[in-house]
Image (cartoon, rainbow, N blue to C red; front, side):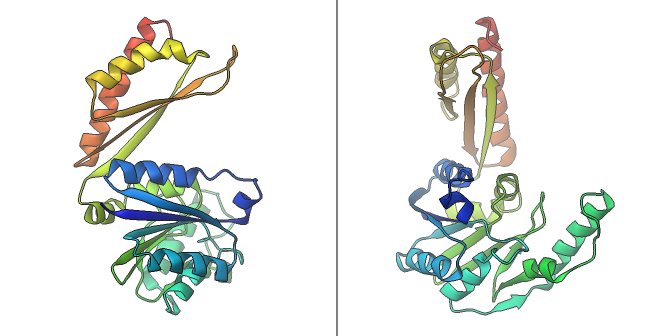
Length: 265
C-alpha cells in the first residue's frame, strides 16, 4: 500500500486563523485511490522547520509527501526553499514555470484582476524551483505545483488556496497520482440540504449507499435549528475521470429524487 504524509505550511493555521481543509481533502483523495495517510503535520513559515519535517518524512521512506502552501510571491512563502534544503539541492530558475507564471499574469491583467501583467521580483520568485523538479500547471491561480522525486519518494508541493489545490489534484496531477497509486482518479461533490434533522436524511442516504456501493456518501452533522442546512459529501474513485463523474452524478440524482419525495430540498 502506498504510504502518504502531508505537510501543511502556514503560521495562519497554527494561529487558528485558517482551517486546514486541504489535509482533509487529500486524505479523502488518498483513501479513494487505495493509499494510506500515516502522518499529518502543520509547520510554521520557517525554512528550517519545513526542511526538518520534510526530511523526517523522507527518512521514514514515505512513498508520497504532499506539502500544502508556501508557493506564493511573498517573503514568507518558503516551501520550495525548505524542499531544496531537505534534499540538498539548489534553487534554479525554471523556464517552464516562468512561462506559466507570465501567461497567468497576462491573462489576469487582461481580465482586470491585477493592475499589470509585467513580471516583478516577487512574481519571478514563483519560478525558482529545486534542481530537477517538474512543474505542474495551476489551472486556477498562478503558482504552479512542483514535483520532485528523491530516492524512491515523491514530493508534491501544492498551493495552499483550497480551490487551486483541488483543481491541480483533480486535473493535471492525475497522471502522476495514477502512476503512484496504480489506480484511476478521485472525485467528490458536496450537496447542501434544507433540513435541520439528520434522522430525516437517513432513509435516503441508506438507499443511495445500498444502490451505489462503490460510492462513499456521508452527511456532515452540525447543530439543530430551523436555519440549519446539512452538507452531504458524495465521493468516488474509478479508472477514469468520466467514470468517477458518472458514478457521482448517478448517486446525486437518486439522492436528490429520494430527498424530494420526502419533502427535503
